[in-house]
Length: 122
Length: 244
Image (cartoon, rainbow over all chains, first blue to last red; front, side, top):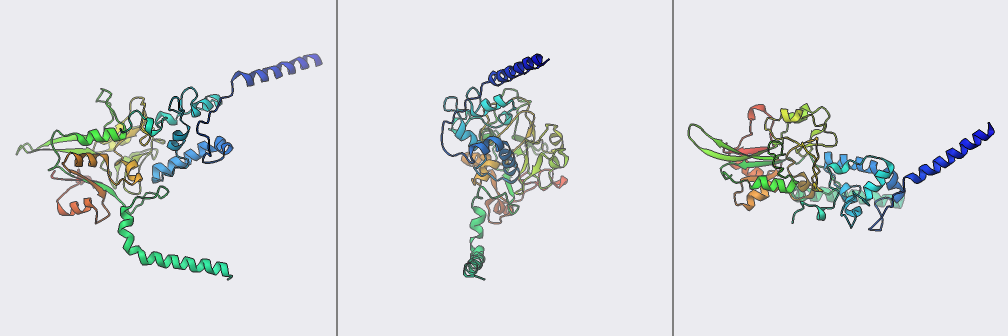
């Protein structure tokens, strides 16, 4: 019985270690190093709340402060290769894919900065 | 009261007095100047337009083209379902044969029926009179499309790509003329259609603050007779028409 429990524990441990290896951690590339609008750990945990709060202020009251603006995130974090925060190596998408969280901001919002936008004014 | 707090108090009083003293002088400048980014849209302002149909050229679609470009609307080749924020309407008086033309877009009503019928509160009127759709809360039911007497609203039927950063648009939501709200918030004080009309030499569209008696639009409204489209509905539209 004890043997069985030990085997089970071993198998479980192996399974867990496998699970952590199965999905490789995303490699987050910060191409423009410098200070984000909040410390990185705060941004990791709360960026969605900042964006949610900011979007209501912007849409309903016309408050367009650059801090916490989605366009500001894209402006800074878009990849220099693809020009986007989406796709392979995209700052937003890589992490969201890893975490399994649907990223639907960019169904409406531009994932590329203004100067790279296909329909930007000449 | 210690010395520090007395100094603080006197400073506040001085600042208040200075504010009173200069406020009548700077009021006009204050109204004309752009809002700071952190300042919310003010109810003291009501954005609106005057469209002088006598100056609007039949066949000219510069305002429509400019609107499409500014807001990233494009032709998919399926005009029945394409979003349309401005339509050019040709009018003809059957008895006299007089023909003229006018752009029709969201009229930015003071009493907007689209806001009344919206089940989620996505359709709303901003403090400065601009009627908008919060696409985060829009469920695409299209009640507002039905309720609008001006056929001003469009539904986005297809997936979109390459939207402009200033104008987010997406499938499954309703949209309409925003009076170039991103330009207003930036302090441009004009819209793409009004600019294009001016550039074409017609100056049929005058945009401005209806609450400011000094503004160009208010001056023109005082000078020439104008009306609200479907004035019988008493929606108090922000877009006024002359010569219809």
